[in-house]
Length: 75
Image 1 (cartoon, rainbow, N blue to C red):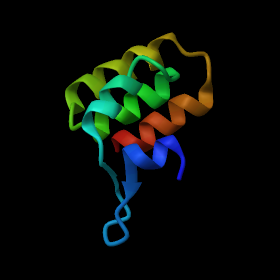
Image 2 (cartoon, helix red, strand yellow):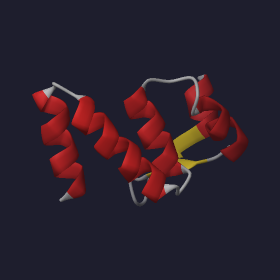
Image 3 (cartoon, rainbow, N blue to C red):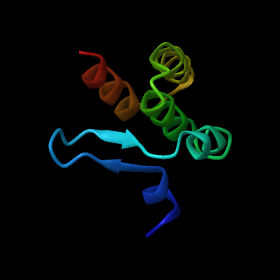
Image 4 (cartoon, rainbow, N blue to C red):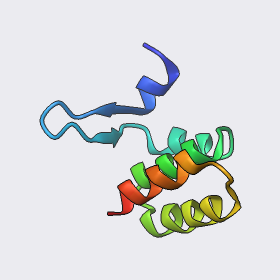
Protein backbone atom coordinates (compact mmCIF):
# COMPACT_ATOMS: atom_id res chain seq x y z
CA UNK A 1 0.00 0.00 0.00
CA UNK A 2 1.41 3.41 -0.93
CA UNK A 3 1.76 6.37 1.42
CA UNK A 4 -1.14 8.18 -0.29
CA UNK A 5 -3.41 5.16 0.09
CA UNK A 6 -2.82 5.22 3.84
CA UNK A 7 -4.04 8.82 3.97
CA UNK A 8 -7.12 8.60 1.74
CA UNK A 9 -9.23 6.19 -0.28
CA UNK A 10 -12.09 6.30 -2.72
CA UNK A 11 -15.39 5.26 -1.17
CA UNK A 12 -16.72 2.44 -3.39
CA UNK A 13 -20.34 3.48 -2.85
CA UNK A 14 -20.10 7.21 -3.53
CA UNK A 15 -16.88 7.17 -5.59
CA UNK A 16 -15.73 10.18 -3.56
CA UNK A 17 -12.31 10.46 -1.99
CA UNK A 18 -12.37 10.30 1.81
CA UNK A 19 -9.63 11.11 4.30
CA UNK A 20 -8.48 8.24 6.53
CA UNK A 21 -5.63 9.92 8.40
CA UNK A 22 -6.33 13.62 9.08
CA UNK A 23 -2.95 14.37 10.75
CA UNK A 24 -1.09 12.84 7.79
CA UNK A 25 -3.27 14.86 5.43
CA UNK A 26 -2.44 18.05 7.34
CA UNK A 27 1.26 17.18 7.06
CA UNK A 28 0.98 16.65 3.30
CA UNK A 29 -0.41 20.17 2.83
CA UNK A 30 3.08 21.63 2.88
CA UNK A 31 4.71 18.93 0.78
CA UNK A 32 2.86 18.74 -2.51
CA UNK A 33 2.23 20.93 -5.53
CA UNK A 34 -0.51 23.60 -5.36
CA UNK A 35 -3.24 21.48 -6.98
CA UNK A 36 -2.61 18.62 -4.56
CA UNK A 37 -2.80 21.10 -1.67
CA UNK A 38 -6.20 22.31 -2.89
CA UNK A 39 -7.43 18.72 -3.21
CA UNK A 40 -6.21 17.83 0.30
CA UNK A 41 -7.85 20.95 1.75
CA UNK A 42 -11.09 19.74 0.21
CA UNK A 43 -10.63 16.24 1.67
CA UNK A 44 -10.08 17.85 5.07
CA UNK A 45 -13.39 19.71 4.57
CA UNK A 46 -11.58 23.06 4.54
CA UNK A 47 -13.60 24.07 1.50
CA UNK A 48 -13.36 27.85 1.86
CA UNK A 49 -9.56 27.65 1.99
CA UNK A 50 -9.53 25.28 -0.99
CA UNK A 51 -11.67 27.65 -3.06
CA UNK A 52 -9.61 30.68 -2.06
CA UNK A 53 -6.33 28.96 -2.93
CA UNK A 54 -7.81 27.66 -6.17
CA UNK A 55 -8.89 31.14 -7.19
CA UNK A 56 -5.44 32.53 -6.33
CA UNK A 57 -3.75 29.77 -8.34
CA UNK A 58 -6.06 30.39 -11.26
CA UNK A 59 -5.35 34.14 -11.18
CA UNK A 60 -1.59 33.45 -11.40
CA UNK A 61 -1.86 30.70 -14.01
CA UNK A 62 -1.22 30.93 -17.73
CA UNK A 63 -2.47 27.34 -18.13
CA UNK A 64 -5.75 27.27 -20.04
CA UNK A 65 -6.33 23.63 -19.03
CA UNK A 66 -6.23 24.66 -15.37
CA UNK A 67 -8.80 27.37 -16.09
CA UNK A 68 -11.14 24.92 -17.81
CA UNK A 69 -10.75 22.36 -15.02
CA UNK A 70 -11.51 24.93 -12.35
CA UNK A 71 -14.61 26.12 -14.20
CA UNK A 72 -15.81 22.53 -14.52
CA UNK A 73 -15.28 21.82 -10.80
CA UNK A 74 -16.99 25.05 -9.76
CA UNK A 75 -20.02 24.62 -11.99
